Image 1 (cartoon, rainbow, N blue to C red):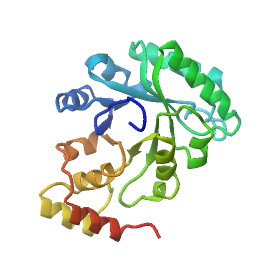
Image 2 (image 1 turned 180 degrees about the horizontal axis):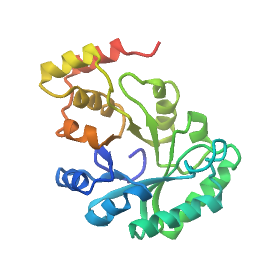
Image 3 (image 1 turned 120 degrees about the horizontal axis):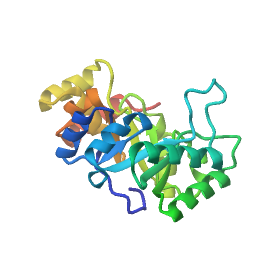
Image 4 (image 1 turned 135 degrees about the vertical axis):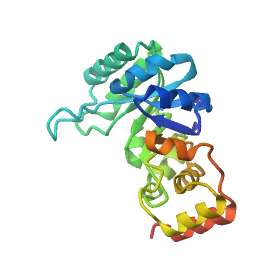
Length: 240
């Protein structure tokens, strides 16, 4: 992924369901976007079969305006909570969940470096960062960003910045949630679900995509889009 040695399955999964996760692993999936809430599923499957990613620095239970805290104290506390809940000894990919304007980027980077050096974390990343925010936070290996056929804002800044910096890109929300005629027509011609066609289009432009329980069954097995169809979808949804 990027210029790091991190290796993940092209499809990642966000789920709390043990059975869905087991099916995902049986199909060759490794990347799971986990939280404390999905700890039971992770415990059930076992660490050796998974590349576990999680995010820190955001607490949705706090009032608006107080949810983002990427200070050293907050990051370390949330890492400890996650490891305790999952029973894991380390996290494969730890991502800062949001850019924190009140914490210097140097402090965030130093905290991530400390966790990597200590062996608690294998690789560091960021979720939802803009291009300049990736640039001022050193030693990142991956970034997760919203990106899909009909949501292509990441192409303006994030994807070019990630490529320049050697940072791998994971797309979340890669499928199209409503009927889009060009996509539906392409999917029918390929005899696959529109969900799979949308995910395949996105995956051709990033390192991995994250899907949820409802999308997972449709995107496996993932089919590479023929060049002509990929180009047609590219043109009809181009930004600007």
